[in-house]
Length: 106
Length: 120
Image (tube, helix red, strand yellow):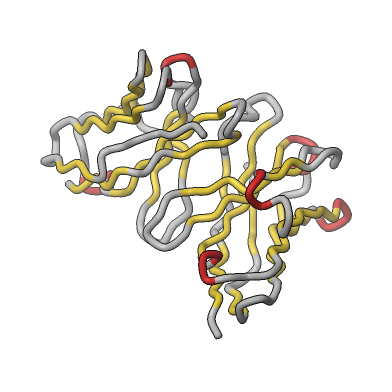
């Protein structure tokens, strides 16, 4: 089955940049999507198709994907960005696959 | 905007079954694939299955095929999931989620989640 690996935690100071990685075998050949989940809440889509943002998501959220690593970048981090972040892909043999999740601490 | 409203928390004994509902806004059934995804305590997400817009072939994750059923009621814009032979490993928050027909492979909208507890 296809596996997506994320660092368990990332710590970042307010106003700085957070980078969250999502590693998978040739993940650059797939479309990667990212979700933000705050405590006690449902996930929210923040980036889709590697780098696109849904309506209402700040430009501070951006994505990239190449080789074996996809990255979610949060610029000018705010206290409200503190959450768990999950990457996700669709794989022909594993269907919908989620990453292990990264806790971002501001 | 799509709104997904799920039924409330459930407590079941091991070996029992649970049925959870997800009521969608009216046009959702014709515009979105509706999925069930679960999240065990402190864990990541696990995809369970999906119903296509307008009904049709339901797809299940292989590991759930023998005890997981999804159904839909178009008259009330509601989808249901039923999980049988519950065990402690099924303790989780169960989410319904919507993926657009044009997007398909990611989840645009999520319900609020339903806590399922399995305890004797």
